[in-house]
Each structure stands twice: as C-alpha cells, then as structure tokens.
Length: 301
Ligand SMILES: [Zn+2]
Image (cartoon, rainbow, N blue to C red):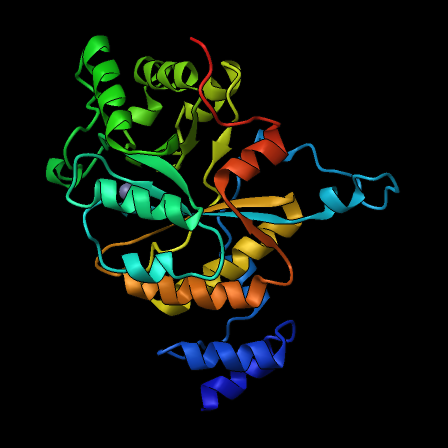
C-alpha cells in the first residue's frame, strides 16, 4: 500500500481513476514509475525517418492527422502455442502479430489474427551472432547459405504464414548486418509487395538503409518492451513508448509471447490504459501507409 501511495505522488501525469484500475490489474505494484526516471532509461532512437517532424499549429486540414500520435505494437514469437497467446489476442487495441513459420500453431495463429483484424508479419528466424541454433526454429536464414538457398527459405517461410503483409526478424543480429543476405530478403519483399520491419537486434543492421535505398519503407523497432521480464518493467517501457510517440509522432514497439508472455501482456494492458487518451494504437500496415504513404499489397515483379 505504501508503494501505491508513493506511486500516486510520483506520477502526477497519471489520472487517478486509470491509475487505480491499473493497480487492480497489476499483481506487482509499481514503485516510483516517474516519467523522469523512465526518460533516463530511454532507448535512443537512431533514425533518419524521425527527422521530418510536422510543424504544430498549422491550420490546414491535415492538422489533426499531423498531431495524431500513433503506436504500432508488434508481438513476436507466435506460432508455437506460446504462453500469453490468448492474453495478447484479448488486448483491447489493435496489435500486429509476428508469427514464426513451420510450427504447430503457425497457421492457426495467422487465421486468428486475421479474424480479429490484426496485421500479420512473418517472424523470420535469422542467424544471430551469439545464441544457440535451436532457438532459431525451422526454416531459418543462416549466414553461410547461398543466394539461391536464402531466396528459397524466405519464399517458403512466407508461403507458410497466411496473411503476412511483411517480415520482421527473429534474432538475426548476424544476418541483418549482412548486405548480401538483406539484399535478397528485401528483393523478395519488393517482389511480393511486402515490407521489412527491422527488429533492431543489431545496431549495425543494414536493413533500414537498404530498405530505404530500394524504395521500401524504413520501418524499425524503436523500443523493446520486455527485455526485463516483469510487469513493472513492461509498464515502464510502455510509458516510454508514449513519450517517444509524442516526440517523434509515432513509435514502433515490440513485445513477445513465450515463457513470460502473460507477464508481458499484463504490463502492456496496464500501459494501454495509461496511454489510450494520448496515442492511437494501429496496425503496422496503417503506420506504413500514414508515415511512408506506402500500401501493403502484391505488386508486379
Ligand atoms: Zn523472435
């Protein structure tokens, strides 16, 4: 109770009623979630694409649009009946569901997402610099593969995940820094009218600049929600997402289903309650359309 009181004092921006609702939601109480503390932990956003900020105060008809703060919430690692799957599908806002190929619930999760009106991404396993190969799952893109093998893998994985409108990387810290491989992945995206979302597991990733150079939208993760697996941390990250969106007009953020999926979902739910009056939660397809004027859909090769 003490900690709840402390939170009421420190979070002056939070509305009392939504805060109480949030406290009821959380199993763990949240000590000292002040926005100043949250800001100090902010993940820096690399980003050429944030540079073109709209000037506030304009009076033309686009004012409302240019002031709308948008958040695309991507949840990774669907496809294997992971914990938190139901909780994520039950969230009260639109999410984007990133599904791994060739797994037990790949198709089921894709259909369920489609029926809920959620965007689907292929969550393509890609070789990391560190980590165990078995974490990758089937159909992974590895650094030592030939051009033809990589192309075949990307196409097969896309064919295995119905309704995919784009690809994001599962792991991939090695592969997303490789121009040869990313060139092939992005070429397949372009041929199929898809886009690539760089999860940014590698700060040396070439995916963003290469996407831009090839005329695809440069979509990149801004904030990971659950690098620490507590509801408290996820909530703190969600508040950062709100701040990032205020500052840069939009925010792309990633969480995960998995062993801690229920914990992450609870933190996200709390964050949505806090942010719902400040930002609009939209699917990734709406974001690429709004920010890059780019429509997902098949195009001729
Ligand atoms: Zn993943």
